Length: 334
Image 1 (spheres, rainbow, N blue to C red):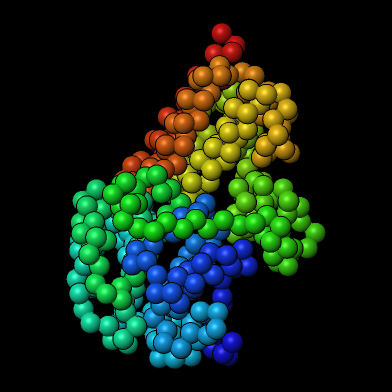
Image 2: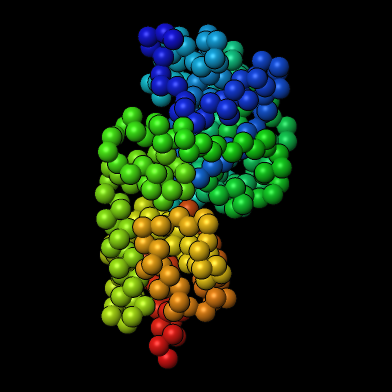
Protein backbone atom coordinates (compact mmCIF):
# COMPACT_ATOMS: atom_id res chain seq x y z
CA UNK A 1 0.00 0.00 0.00
CA UNK A 2 1.13 3.55 -0.69
CA UNK A 3 2.56 5.52 2.18
CA UNK A 4 -0.28 8.02 2.24
CA UNK A 5 -3.07 5.47 2.17
CA UNK A 6 -5.67 5.85 4.87
CA UNK A 7 -6.72 3.09 7.26
CA UNK A 8 -8.42 0.15 5.52
CA UNK A 9 -11.59 -1.55 6.67
CA UNK A 10 -11.85 -3.45 9.94
CA UNK A 11 -10.94 -7.15 9.69
CA UNK A 12 -14.52 -8.36 10.23
CA UNK A 13 -15.68 -6.29 7.24
CA UNK A 14 -13.56 -8.20 4.72
CA UNK A 15 -16.41 -10.33 3.35
CA UNK A 16 -18.63 -7.33 2.63
CA UNK A 17 -15.76 -5.43 1.02
CA UNK A 18 -14.91 -8.34 -1.26
CA UNK A 19 -18.54 -8.57 -2.35
CA UNK A 20 -18.57 -4.91 -3.32
CA UNK A 21 -15.22 -5.13 -5.07
CA UNK A 22 -16.38 -8.15 -7.07
CA UNK A 23 -19.48 -6.23 -8.14
CA UNK A 24 -17.32 -3.25 -9.13
CA UNK A 25 -15.05 -5.40 -11.32
CA UNK A 26 -18.09 -6.95 -13.03
CA UNK A 27 -19.70 -3.51 -13.48
CA UNK A 28 -22.56 -4.52 -11.14
CA UNK A 29 -22.01 -1.93 -8.42
CA UNK A 30 -25.42 -0.65 -7.29
CA UNK A 31 -26.26 3.01 -7.70
CA UNK A 32 -27.78 3.07 -4.21
CA UNK A 33 -26.52 1.07 -1.24
CA UNK A 34 -28.32 0.77 2.08
CA UNK A 35 -25.70 -0.17 4.66
CA UNK A 36 -27.08 -1.55 7.90
CA UNK A 37 -25.75 -3.15 11.05
CA UNK A 38 -25.91 -2.69 14.79
CA UNK A 39 -24.28 0.30 16.36
CA UNK A 40 -20.56 -0.30 16.83
CA UNK A 41 -19.67 -2.51 13.84
CA UNK A 42 -17.87 0.31 12.04
CA UNK A 43 -20.41 1.31 9.40
CA UNK A 44 -19.01 4.84 9.19
CA UNK A 45 -15.47 3.53 8.74
CA UNK A 46 -16.62 1.16 6.01
CA UNK A 47 -18.59 3.80 4.12
CA UNK A 48 -15.64 6.17 4.30
CA UNK A 49 -13.39 3.56 2.71
CA UNK A 50 -16.06 2.87 0.08
CA UNK A 51 -16.51 6.55 -0.79
CA UNK A 52 -12.75 7.11 -1.07
CA UNK A 53 -12.36 4.06 -3.29
CA UNK A 54 -15.19 5.13 -5.59
CA UNK A 55 -13.65 8.57 -6.08
CA UNK A 56 -10.02 7.41 -6.42
CA UNK A 57 -8.70 6.74 -9.93
CA UNK A 58 -5.73 4.68 -8.73
CA UNK A 59 -7.21 2.01 -6.48
CA UNK A 60 -4.89 -0.80 -5.39
CA UNK A 61 -5.38 -4.50 -6.12
CA UNK A 62 -7.82 -4.90 -3.21
CA UNK A 63 -9.92 -1.98 -4.33
CA UNK A 64 -8.82 0.50 -1.65
CA UNK A 65 -8.10 4.13 -2.41
CA UNK A 66 -4.44 4.90 -3.10
CA UNK A 67 -4.32 7.69 -0.51
CA UNK A 68 -1.87 9.80 -2.54
CA UNK A 69 -3.71 11.18 -5.56
CA UNK A 70 -5.40 14.58 -5.73
CA UNK A 71 -8.80 12.98 -5.16
CA UNK A 72 -7.68 11.19 -2.00
CA UNK A 73 -5.95 14.28 -0.63
CA UNK A 74 -9.05 16.39 -1.24
CA UNK A 75 -11.22 13.79 0.51
CA UNK A 76 -8.90 13.78 3.51
CA UNK A 77 -9.06 17.57 3.65
CA UNK A 78 -12.86 17.52 3.48
CA UNK A 79 -12.87 19.55 0.26
CA UNK A 80 -13.65 16.92 -2.39
CA UNK A 81 -15.99 18.50 -4.96
CA UNK A 82 -17.53 15.15 -5.91
CA UNK A 83 -18.47 14.09 -2.38
CA UNK A 84 -21.52 15.22 -0.41
CA UNK A 85 -22.21 14.29 3.21
CA UNK A 86 -25.84 14.69 4.28
CA UNK A 87 -26.63 14.57 7.99
CA UNK A 88 -28.77 16.46 10.53
CA UNK A 89 -27.64 20.02 11.18
CA UNK A 90 -27.59 19.23 14.90
CA UNK A 91 -27.76 16.02 16.89
CA UNK A 92 -31.34 14.98 17.41
CA UNK A 93 -32.62 17.03 14.47
CA UNK A 94 -34.15 15.63 11.30
CA UNK A 95 -32.74 15.48 7.79
CA UNK A 96 -35.14 17.79 5.96
CA UNK A 97 -36.44 18.06 2.42
CA UNK A 98 -33.99 20.90 1.78
CA UNK A 99 -31.15 18.48 2.55
CA UNK A 100 -32.39 15.84 0.09
CA UNK A 101 -33.04 18.45 -2.61
CA UNK A 102 -29.36 19.32 -2.34
CA UNK A 103 -28.64 15.69 -3.21
CA UNK A 104 -30.60 15.94 -6.45
CA UNK A 105 -28.89 19.20 -7.41
CA UNK A 106 -25.44 17.85 -6.50
CA UNK A 107 -25.81 14.72 -8.64
CA UNK A 108 -26.80 16.70 -11.74
CA UNK A 109 -23.41 18.41 -11.77
CA UNK A 110 -20.52 17.06 -13.80
CA UNK A 111 -17.84 15.14 -11.90
CA UNK A 112 -14.66 17.18 -11.40
CA UNK A 113 -12.33 14.16 -11.39
CA UNK A 114 -14.26 11.96 -13.80
CA UNK A 115 -14.84 9.14 -11.31
CA UNK A 116 -18.48 9.93 -10.59
CA UNK A 117 -20.10 11.47 -7.55
CA UNK A 118 -20.77 10.05 -4.07
CA UNK A 119 -23.48 11.01 -1.58
CA UNK A 120 -23.31 9.67 1.97
CA UNK A 121 -26.55 10.07 3.95
CA UNK A 122 -26.25 9.25 7.64
CA UNK A 123 -28.21 8.37 9.67
CA UNK A 124 -30.88 7.54 7.11
CA UNK A 125 -33.54 7.12 9.79
CA UNK A 126 -33.22 10.83 10.55
CA UNK A 127 -35.00 11.71 7.29
CA UNK A 128 -38.44 13.15 7.91
CA UNK A 129 -41.27 11.92 5.61
CA UNK A 130 -40.95 14.86 3.22
CA UNK A 131 -37.20 14.30 2.86
CA UNK A 132 -37.62 10.57 2.27
CA UNK A 133 -40.27 11.13 -0.41
CA UNK A 134 -38.08 13.77 -2.06
CA UNK A 135 -35.21 11.28 -2.29
CA UNK A 136 -37.32 8.59 -3.99
CA UNK A 137 -37.10 10.01 -7.52
CA UNK A 138 -33.32 10.33 -7.26
CA UNK A 139 -33.10 6.71 -6.14
CA UNK A 140 -35.27 5.65 -9.08
CA UNK A 141 -33.31 7.55 -11.75
CA UNK A 142 -29.79 8.30 -10.52
CA UNK A 143 -27.33 9.96 -12.91
CA UNK A 144 -24.67 7.62 -14.39
CA UNK A 145 -21.59 7.18 -12.20
CA UNK A 146 -23.34 8.28 -9.02
CA UNK A 147 -23.27 6.31 -5.80
CA UNK A 148 -25.70 6.99 -2.96
CA UNK A 149 -24.86 5.36 0.36
CA UNK A 150 -27.55 5.37 3.04
CA UNK A 151 -26.44 4.25 6.51
CA UNK A 152 -28.70 3.16 9.35
CA UNK A 153 -28.79 0.97 12.44
CA UNK A 154 -32.60 0.70 12.27
CA UNK A 155 -33.57 -0.14 8.67
CA UNK A 156 -37.13 -0.94 9.73
CA UNK A 157 -37.69 2.74 10.46
CA UNK A 158 -37.19 3.66 6.79
CA UNK A 159 -39.97 3.80 4.22
CA UNK A 160 -40.41 0.48 2.43
CA UNK A 161 -40.11 2.38 -0.85
CA UNK A 162 -36.68 3.66 0.18
CA UNK A 163 -35.48 0.19 1.14
CA UNK A 164 -36.77 -1.36 -2.09
CA UNK A 165 -34.78 1.08 -4.23
CA UNK A 166 -31.46 0.30 -2.55
CA UNK A 167 -29.30 -2.78 -2.47
CA UNK A 168 -29.04 -3.68 1.20
CA UNK A 169 -25.85 -4.88 2.84
CA UNK A 170 -25.57 -5.85 6.49
CA UNK A 171 -22.28 -5.35 8.31
CA UNK A 172 -21.78 -8.01 10.96
CA UNK A 173 -18.78 -9.12 12.98
CA UNK A 174 -17.61 -12.69 13.29
CA UNK A 175 -17.07 -13.15 17.02
CA UNK A 176 -13.73 -14.93 16.67
CA UNK A 177 -12.33 -12.27 14.35
CA UNK A 178 -13.69 -9.52 16.60
CA UNK A 179 -12.19 -11.03 19.76
CA UNK A 180 -8.76 -11.32 18.16
CA UNK A 181 -8.90 -7.68 17.10
CA UNK A 182 -10.03 -6.57 20.56
CA UNK A 183 -7.20 -8.47 22.26
CA UNK A 184 -4.79 -6.50 20.08
CA UNK A 185 -6.27 -3.28 21.48
CA UNK A 186 -5.95 -4.25 25.16
CA UNK A 187 -4.83 -7.41 26.94
CA UNK A 188 -6.30 -8.79 30.11
CA UNK A 189 -9.93 -7.80 29.49
CA UNK A 190 -12.90 -10.16 29.45
CA UNK A 191 -13.59 -9.45 25.80
CA UNK A 192 -15.95 -12.40 25.49
CA UNK A 193 -18.33 -10.80 28.02
CA UNK A 194 -17.85 -7.29 26.67
CA UNK A 195 -18.51 -8.42 23.10
CA UNK A 196 -21.64 -10.29 24.18
CA UNK A 197 -22.94 -7.25 26.05
CA UNK A 198 -22.21 -5.11 23.00
CA UNK A 199 -24.35 -7.29 20.76
CA UNK A 200 -21.29 -8.59 18.88
CA UNK A 201 -20.32 -5.02 17.94
CA UNK A 202 -16.52 -4.74 18.45
CA UNK A 203 -16.31 -0.94 18.55
CA UNK A 204 -19.13 -0.86 21.05
CA UNK A 205 -17.28 -3.44 23.18
CA UNK A 206 -14.16 -1.29 23.04
CA UNK A 207 -16.17 1.75 24.08
CA UNK A 208 -17.59 -0.15 27.06
CA UNK A 209 -14.05 -0.91 28.19
CA UNK A 210 -12.57 2.54 27.57
CA UNK A 211 -15.37 4.78 28.86
CA UNK A 212 -16.20 2.89 32.03
CA UNK A 213 -19.71 2.23 30.76
CA UNK A 214 -19.94 -1.08 32.63
CA UNK A 215 -19.93 0.89 35.89
CA UNK A 216 -22.76 3.10 34.62
CA UNK A 217 -24.57 -0.05 33.51
CA UNK A 218 -24.51 -1.45 37.04
CA UNK A 219 -25.64 1.88 38.48
CA UNK A 220 -28.63 1.84 36.14
CA UNK A 221 -29.52 -1.73 37.08
CA UNK A 222 -29.38 -0.79 40.76
CA UNK A 223 -31.71 2.13 40.02
CA UNK A 224 -34.21 -0.22 38.35
CA UNK A 225 -34.07 -2.54 41.36
CA UNK A 226 -34.72 0.34 43.75
CA UNK A 227 -37.69 1.46 41.68
CA UNK A 228 -39.07 -2.08 41.57
CA UNK A 229 -38.91 -2.33 45.39
CA UNK A 230 -40.41 1.15 45.93
CA UNK A 231 -37.14 2.47 47.34
CA UNK A 232 -36.71 5.16 44.69
CA UNK A 233 -38.88 7.57 42.74
CA UNK A 234 -38.82 6.61 39.03
CA UNK A 235 -38.61 10.20 37.79
CA UNK A 236 -35.53 10.96 39.91
CA UNK A 237 -33.71 8.02 38.32
CA UNK A 238 -33.46 9.86 34.98
CA UNK A 239 -30.27 12.00 34.76
CA UNK A 240 -30.73 15.78 34.61
CA UNK A 241 -29.87 17.33 32.26
CA UNK A 242 -30.14 14.40 29.88
CA UNK A 243 -28.03 14.29 26.73
CA UNK A 244 -29.16 12.23 23.76
CA UNK A 245 -26.11 9.97 24.08
CA UNK A 246 -27.12 9.21 27.69
CA UNK A 247 -30.65 8.41 26.58
CA UNK A 248 -29.30 6.04 23.92
CA UNK A 249 -27.12 4.27 26.51
CA UNK A 250 -30.04 3.84 28.92
CA UNK A 251 -32.31 2.47 26.20
CA UNK A 252 -29.55 0.14 24.99
CA UNK A 253 -29.18 -1.48 28.41
CA UNK A 254 -32.93 -1.57 29.01
CA UNK A 255 -33.43 -3.38 25.71
CA UNK A 256 -30.69 -5.90 26.52
CA UNK A 257 -32.00 -6.64 30.03
CA UNK A 258 -35.62 -6.90 28.94
CA UNK A 259 -34.68 -9.32 26.18
CA UNK A 260 -33.02 -11.58 28.75
CA UNK A 261 -35.87 -11.16 31.24
CA UNK A 262 -38.39 -12.29 28.64
CA UNK A 263 -36.22 -15.31 27.91
CA UNK A 264 -35.97 -16.13 31.61
CA UNK A 265 -39.73 -15.79 31.89
CA UNK A 266 -40.23 -18.44 29.23
CA UNK A 267 -37.45 -20.95 30.04
CA UNK A 268 -35.65 -21.53 33.31
CA UNK A 269 -32.29 -21.96 31.55
CA UNK A 270 -32.44 -20.13 28.21
CA UNK A 271 -29.50 -20.88 25.91
CA UNK A 272 -28.95 -17.36 24.54
CA UNK A 273 -28.71 -15.09 27.57
CA UNK A 274 -26.57 -12.01 27.01
CA UNK A 275 -26.19 -10.59 30.52
CA UNK A 276 -24.81 -13.71 32.18
CA UNK A 277 -23.01 -11.70 34.87
CA UNK A 278 -26.34 -10.42 36.29
CA UNK A 279 -28.57 -13.38 35.46
CA UNK A 280 -29.83 -13.91 39.02
CA UNK A 281 -30.76 -10.24 39.43
CA UNK A 282 -32.64 -10.21 36.15
CA UNK A 283 -34.42 -13.41 37.11
CA UNK A 284 -35.64 -11.78 40.33
CA UNK A 285 -36.88 -8.72 38.45
CA UNK A 286 -38.63 -10.88 35.85
CA UNK A 287 -40.41 -12.75 38.65
CA UNK A 288 -42.05 -9.46 39.67
CA UNK A 289 -43.60 -8.94 36.22
CA UNK A 290 -46.57 -10.34 34.37
CA UNK A 291 -45.26 -12.06 31.24
CA UNK A 292 -47.47 -10.28 28.71
CA UNK A 293 -46.93 -6.89 30.30
CA UNK A 294 -43.17 -7.46 30.36
CA UNK A 295 -43.20 -8.29 26.65
CA UNK A 296 -45.28 -5.19 25.90
CA UNK A 297 -42.92 -3.01 27.93
CA UNK A 298 -39.95 -4.37 25.98
CA UNK A 299 -41.68 -3.46 22.72
CA UNK A 300 -42.24 0.05 24.07
CA UNK A 301 -38.55 0.44 24.89
CA UNK A 302 -37.57 -0.81 21.42
CA UNK A 303 -39.88 1.74 19.78
CA UNK A 304 -38.44 4.50 21.95
CA UNK A 305 -34.89 3.61 20.88
CA UNK A 306 -35.92 3.87 17.24
CA UNK A 307 -37.39 7.35 17.79
CA UNK A 308 -34.33 9.02 19.30
CA UNK A 309 -33.48 10.83 16.08
CA UNK A 310 -36.95 12.34 15.90
CA UNK A 311 -37.71 15.70 17.52
CA UNK A 312 -38.93 14.57 20.91
CA UNK A 313 -38.26 15.20 24.58
CA UNK A 314 -35.92 12.37 25.62
CA UNK A 315 -36.14 13.41 29.27
CA UNK A 316 -39.93 13.07 29.31
CA UNK A 317 -39.82 9.84 27.30
CA UNK A 318 -37.48 8.15 29.80
CA UNK A 319 -39.43 9.45 32.77
CA UNK A 320 -42.57 7.87 31.32
CA UNK A 321 -40.73 4.59 30.74
CA UNK A 322 -39.41 4.52 34.30
CA UNK A 323 -42.89 5.26 35.68
CA UNK A 324 -44.24 2.39 33.56
CA UNK A 325 -41.47 0.17 34.94
CA UNK A 326 -42.56 1.06 38.47
CA UNK A 327 -46.18 0.11 37.72
CA UNK A 328 -45.06 -3.11 36.04
CA UNK A 329 -42.84 -4.33 38.89
CA UNK A 330 -44.71 -2.95 41.89
CA UNK A 331 -47.93 -4.70 40.92
CA UNK A 332 -46.24 -7.77 42.37
CA UNK A 333 -46.49 -6.18 45.83
CA UNK A 334 -50.20 -5.26 45.62
